[in-house]
Image 1 (tube, rainbow, N blue to C red):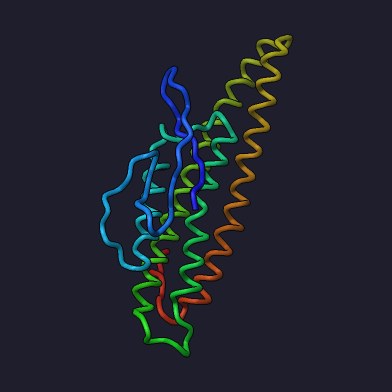
Image 2: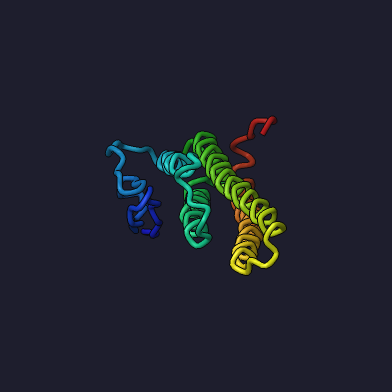
Length: 199
């Protein structure tokens, strides 16, 4: 399953569309760079995938907060890790009647760590862009107060205010996505793994 994500250029470079492949049978790719082909145990690829997505989004310079469409596309790609973790939970973690067939505690631990990392990565991306856009809105408001007749400035301010509201709404989307994932995790793993109390 390939999702298209935009690579953000620097200076005058053109933006290029590249594919981010998260298929189990393919090497993990981040902005066109394939990771070394190393054997992964079942479930390990999820942790690796979450880590790669986190590394992709963590540096503030790698996330384009100016264009909402690109920001939203990045989140869409990052959220696919939750779909894959939910699938893994439903297909590999045994119910109580089949416990003992696999090392369910280790599998649940890996999936728990993958979920925590994926959710933290997306939270950082969203809040970082909200902070950046809020700063832009504040600056434009100050300029607007000094130039009340500047219609171009007013148009730009309204555009940034709208974008800020959309970005803030992504926090609500995150809550829904995360709740769904944790619900499945708790249903499948509550008898196999207990998360650390401080988390």
